[in-house]
Length: 117
Image (cartoon, rainbow, N blue to C red):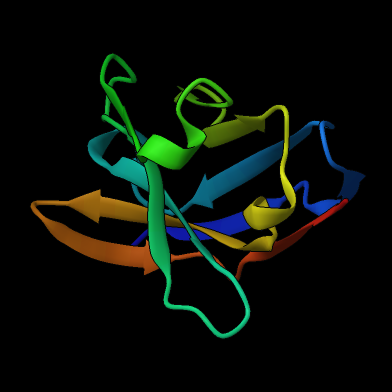
């Protein structure tokens, strides 16, 4: 089973940028699609974006389209989430998850993103 570790979170002012990383170890990373989720205080975890195993296909939730970009480097076993023009409502703990065959096999521990107004 693949293990995931997120990094890159922090405190940023509105309009700023952060790049999150999701580093994988264990089994072959390229067999997994990878999704990013986030959970704000008092709210349910929500889907943010997804990238296919090859990286050719991506999906974004409407609220981040045009601001967030997901990418992956299978040689480095890493998925990235570039977040630009951040808004206070983007404040949340961000999680990456590895998906295969419609099932999430592994989740990271999360990284905190805080956007101040």
